[in-house]
Length: 570
View: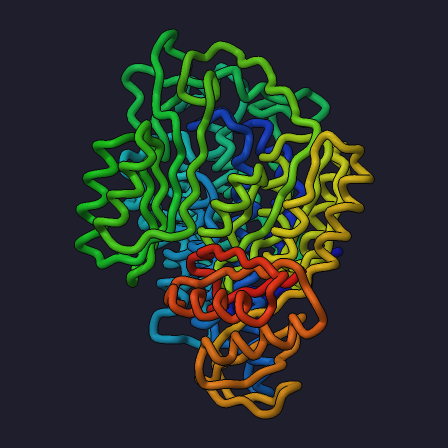
């Protein structure tokens, strides 16, 4: 269906563009994954771009929802929407391609939000596209032509020569990007041998096509040609080209073609980093010496760091020295997977069954991982999107998967993810766990050798028999089931509802625990956040030991989990 075209680049245009980009990337994701042979032939460029834009969409929608909730006469400004788009992409960026796309969006936002204009015209869009291309190129340690950077620069060059409204400029940028994309096989030998265009550039053309549709109401014509295979022409084998070519420097990574016997970095390391500009410059130098594929994007104290290294620990330690890294993701490419020999790797055998769980903190992520679960980390205020859950299910590489969302608000997100992976032939059971402590109970009775249905029933029963609570701090005054709370009050929530309002963490937690145990119980699980001292756990353990003789207590450290304390009683 044709969209109602946007005349100017305003907040609504940002929202429309993000939504259309997500939609079009969703349609093109598998095709882009299939042509992903550079810089790493791991078949995930389309998925990484999709997840990055999905995070941008969520941030923009949150800004619009916030303004709607305030019931004011005006919606968000262009600056509000553009900054949200850039921030969402930054914190949700995945892989080389997603990290560079995040910087492209950030570069655009820097121009669109400058002086807080009501809207931008064709000239503003030209400037935004130029800033996007230039800032993305600066973010890559060793730029190489024939990549998404080339496509972005061509789009900006074509836009520079266009005169007219936003629709005219967007179409010129799209046409310039398409032409540059078609030329990428002649710039990178690995693309020419595989008969494909650059996957990251292909994704950017898709995003620019959504920009054309935003301002014209017409869907941009499809990228065509024999440079890449359509689904009917067959898919590229991502194992076909894996290792570096002599004389080809690194871009967003360094491997372009197979050199027998030559190996490259074994790990991909990605993290968000809170750090000052000077510390980041020193970090770039250190990481550049450690590995390749270095891309550092962001600014204003928040950065997204991406690098391929052999020593993942050293890459993380470098981040710790520079500032505070978090949302750390380390992926092992595996033997024969990426930079290695170029020989085709035999497919890894699928496990029969796996558990995929959303967890609210690093401590619980470690606990779940030790129990054999594949985890998705949910940061406070940053719930995972359905695409992240789909990725986790694929990463689990099993025929049968039990999915634990561990949050009532994630049930629909998890259900959407389950539906998607079922179309890929994976059997998925969603257990509607509403807290991580319910997930712990479910995982404790998980037996992968049992029949799938029996295992799911047992895990569901264990989760359902576990009452859950959390102790947190009120952010503002509000009405609750227990009365009116003020900002700074300590709240005790039982099964999702506020049951206790107090002033002290230990006392509030004790009251919550007594109420829960009044209905009986055999086991108490306490999960402490980073801000809760061990003395609170000692106090509660003592309370259980003295007042409930037949009840055992187990204590875990959850890390930065949002709530001060999670409590489970089963």
